[in-house]
Image (cartoon, rainbow, N blue to C red; front, top):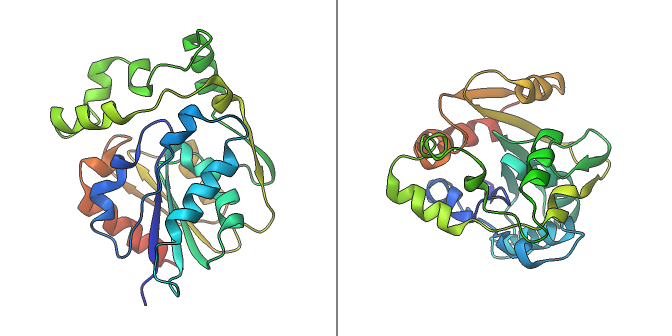
Length: 226
């Protein structure tokens, strides 16, 4: 039986970023993390709980491939630890990698500094409003897709960006792989240094909404690589 796929979206955007890919993978589910916008810290148990609840809808004997995009990659170790299913592989799609041990910062230092500049005492503006709109538009196939995904974005509290996420031992005692959208970067080099297979697709950070066929096929290949 082919494994089921659990697609974790970045908490800075929403589950619709994975919708088209989910339709192309067997038994795929996309947990929503939109509720983090109104939650209190710690946030990482809520991410793990959301994935566990979504996985409960899968066939009872299905093994799982965890697929994480962007910032969701930082939560993969706690999700692996929380799931009561066999996780056969973890595929990081243009994603942040968790620390190898100890604690993972909630976001990169550069993004944390940007978030602090955007903070005004309340929830932060949606992620797409942090950047030049022409730069954001280049990530989408058309204006309608951009509007739908941007309308779904949460306004996260500053505490989300300042959190630290534990890294349970043994989470990577399984197949792990990295899919990079674009050229070689530090994350791809880090994944390769960890001994993971690394693949590339040309595109921007949200390429899964532009070419879901290619992204779904790359995920399937990486989840079965040696």
